[in-house]
Image (cartoon, rainbow, N blue to C red; front, side):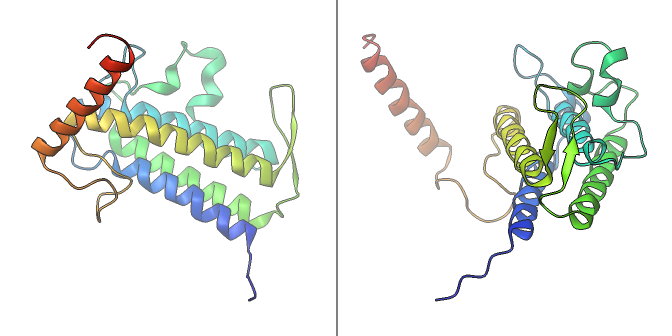
Length: 197
């Protein structure tokens, strides 16, 4: 059996899957729900988009001498308040934030297309400043999927929507009663293990 491999294409599939999953987490929500903080540290959906936009522009643009031509949140961190890239101001439109993310990923894809995976980039910070495109792309995939996990939890807290995408079953089947019973089973097991039952 012959196995065809295309490492660059495989990596592109995984980064795009993460981007798409993150974007669908915003579908159908009000401006308030897109922006409201749902954890003690302020985690919110548009803030996650802003953060990954800046990270992707930095890692797959600036690092390889291909700077994204628009300002992005991570580039202004030195002059902005802490966590400026993790929330959306009232004067920042959702369309502006999502449009910039799509333009950044098109710019990133052009970098990936133009360079071999062993191309060396210069990170503008940190203890390991030189990295291959392959390693940087793996980092971007891991970081984006990590933030998709945050978005999973935030979206579930907003309206109960779960899963990797808006279509097709990709979570356990069950209605509200089934999920409540599942929650109760998990709680009971935790209480027993913790000596609280």
